[in-house]
Picture 1 (tube, rainbow, N blue to C red):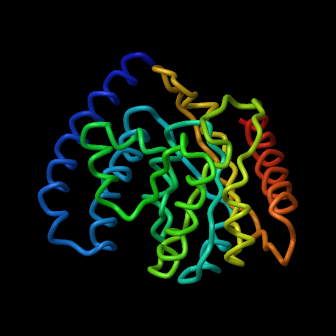
Picture 2 (cartoon, rainbow, N blue to C red):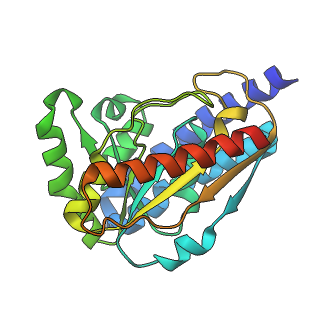
Picture 3 (cartoon, rainbow, N blue to C red):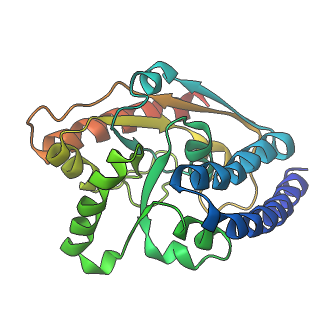
Length: 242
């Protein structure tokens, strides 16, 4: 049954992405950035709805009051990265539009990559090293000024529940240089939708938003340590509870 559900969901995603992606490519030239973003993010919303209907993947959000507190204010979002699920949930269910920082290779994916290439995201060539961060910094201030939150997955790649990798310091550096608070997000999506897994398990994913982390003149390393400690400890607790 789990295999059949996963197969149906895969077909659902391919069909809906092809249809919605085609529509988006047609209408995008006639929309401003915010309307273009809103139109594009209907597909991630459709996809999370499909995951609920076909896979039995429900979700609950804790800490929504933190998000409301920063509505209309600049912020940087740092999320745990265990699954493809959170890449669908965050942009489609957070009220404030997100500007993701992602590797430019994603632009090659048909429809999905073409679509995000038309959005005010920040794509980075990791092979450029230091220049890659300078590219992020030059674009981030503009996006914040236009009402977008900057979104990072500081691990840099999806991890298995309980797996530890070194956090990259781009978000912390940006927060200290722009004096912008960081909103940390923990979750346990990897328990139900593991990295690179074909078969997904039904259940309830918990997304937990933490209290804002302010730079307050500290070094990027100190800010990064607080971000990593909160996300990892809370995610571990959510994984154990699941």
